[in-house]
Image (cartoon, rainbow, N blue to C red):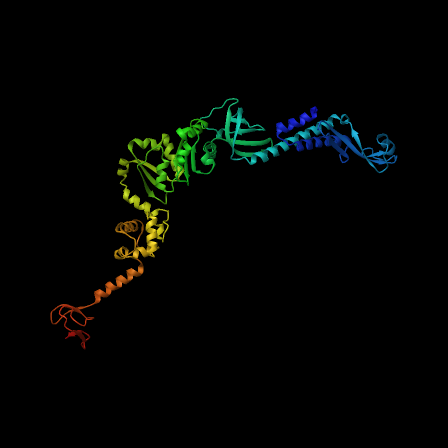
Length: 491
């Protein structure tokens, strides 16, 4: 049966979260401190625990010396006294002599106890700090313990944490013993101990809740791209996925809304808008104003990130939200300045939708990836790609340069195939006239304008100096240069 001493060691381990090794080291230091206070030194003190940790003893290690008036009784013992303890003792040997712990005076014990308590507190602080420092950003469950100055102290097992007023949702009210789920925000060492700060207002707290409730998010199938929040009132979360067969919004909502309802309950009824993330700014702005229906988004200024959202009259108040909350959160979510207007209000502003669309195209940041292979053309079938390849045509440039007669001469192509190819080229290929071609055309036009025309002396038809016969009557002609530099035609 273990003694009270062993039980005390186990209790320290459980309550303070300190390993057995550290507990035993603290007890050893406590006894050595008491020994030093009693005898002036602890250099020759030895502390030993029983195998079952049921007790601990302190020994004084002394050197056996011959009887001498000048020996040190603290570190030395004369041979005659040593033989009383061990018959085989000889001069020069060392012997362990058990020290009665009751010999330690009250002051020595109190001083050692105080040092031991300090050591235990420091060990506990360092142990807990190492453990919780790695848990920053994780969800933890605790229980309401007490409240002071509107700050809530939460029992999290090995220690207590604090949920400051600024990190509490305005909707939440707690009573003694209530279960509290929160995220670890900070872990700090202070002079009074370890401080673990919890939060329920951080956007990452919402992310962690979604990870717990939505397996697709936890597994990385659905991504949380952006989150904005007004704690206690509304949260907007933009999600996406790379898998075409998965609806990211539907995955977060769950069957019959089971998942989202669970999250709303955890957030004490806070409204949550789940929307699809989109790289297209206009579409993303539309989604961000959910639950309002947006008819159109006009990009007014790409550089200043200014956009105008057009909504039906009955959707205006919903798009703006109570005290402007919905549009304010949408602004933060998309990082744009969004004005919300009805169609009538838009007309009063005299903003041309066509002009806005043109501006969107001019300032669009998405670069169009150039393609060269016919197989990369959108909408072209594998059969047509194979037929063209059999005819030695694999590049779009080659296909575009071919005349319609040449296409009809290719093996295996039908009239419908040719119509389909022409339609695909028209929809997806932009033919840019090179500068060289333009220069040549301009030069030819210029040359043409400079050629002088004359009349055939036989039939009156138009002739030029580069002709040797009339194109109309066939008479042979030649031109002679007169002395004044003019040209004269002759037969």
